[in-house]
Image (cartoon, rainbow, N blue to C red; front, side, top):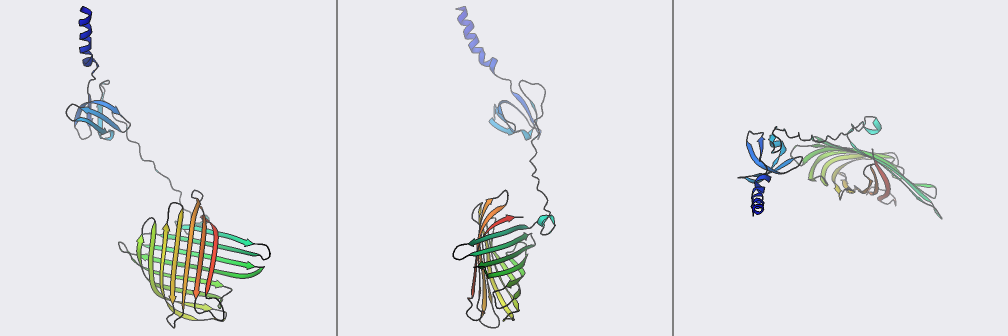
Length: 315
């Protein structure tokens, strides 16, 4: 019987002996809590307060802690500082300082066939885009050459520049642009044109960009059979769509009606870009361009289609 009494007494006293002494927590705002620590992580403490119940407190709010097993107050470890990502400074195109902080891309395409007839084609392009809160600038340059049975069948070059002056908190903007063309298979040797006007941003998000432009300008042709100065209007749209992380589509169409007569020009371009290696900056680009010109003479086709397959590098 004596052993049974001792055993019952030990069972009754066990919860009192095993119960932990509450810890004292002082918060940064001056409040003090006395509660049991249920669990803890590097960032939080989980407490069981006799009145407030179970609560979770960030360590950043704790000034000092006196635990049940340590009578000395401790200060919670400082929070880790956010990692700083270092971005290399842009030294411009090939380190020359040109086009600094622009988005730059080089396109290169080669193609051909061999057999009863042989063809070969070369296309080179350079694009550069820059945007700030005040302006948006786009520069494009392209060279195209094709041979059929060792005879030149197409050779053209153009370079263009367009600048938009943006307005804070408004979708409206002003623009001005120009283009220079060389083409061995036109009625002229080279052509310049310029235009200016107003534009409107219909959509401008991280994945979709869509704007329209309307203005006035001129084109001037030199050499060959056609040497004319033509005042003309300008109406165009431009869109860029990121289909997903790897696929991008760019489309533009610009209509130039003559202000002298019913003649007109229409420039269209469509590019599909597939990122092959985003780390290296290599992509596959499929493109088609066409210029329709109602002023061509003789039996020349008014359409001038060009199809290109290129590798594109971010510079």
